[in-house]
Length: 230
Image (tube, rainbow, N blue to C red; front, side):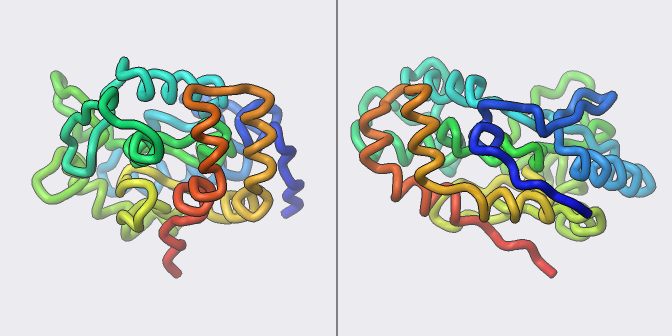
């Protein structure tokens, strides 16, 4: 299959010309969209109604989330799901707290059109308030069956779990699926220089602090993932 490299604007979420929209609303690259439909069909045979709560996310959308986390308008959680007093944190400690669960604008894998955050709609009680936290996908959680199923079958359609466990960067996200054939290529094309240029073009909250720590952010929160299992 011919897979053209993405442009810098596409890789950093500043363009979406590389995407198609599914009937269900997801924005993905065409090959990833086809694989996602296959995975949904496979899940349905096992009684799982796969649904995406997030797919493509633009730079602007990620920047809004980032701004809200930096200002304290949106909660910043630690690995035990406890809210942090973000206004009391400064410097790298503040960035580290936010980056645990929220990607830097321009550096989110969701910009690529290869990623989905997924739930099992069939397992949702009518009055359930979705949290999207690891406990929901573990034993006793509302999506425990889905969490186990994804570890067994995500690879059936070419997907993997890049954050299936914490490796010192992004927290464990058992809901985050990545379409490996395209995501691998995107990661190989994505550079710290590309990210730097995107941030210069569209400054974000804590801009100078981010730029001063960009190589470390790139290494720890972009490159450090769980590799796909064969």
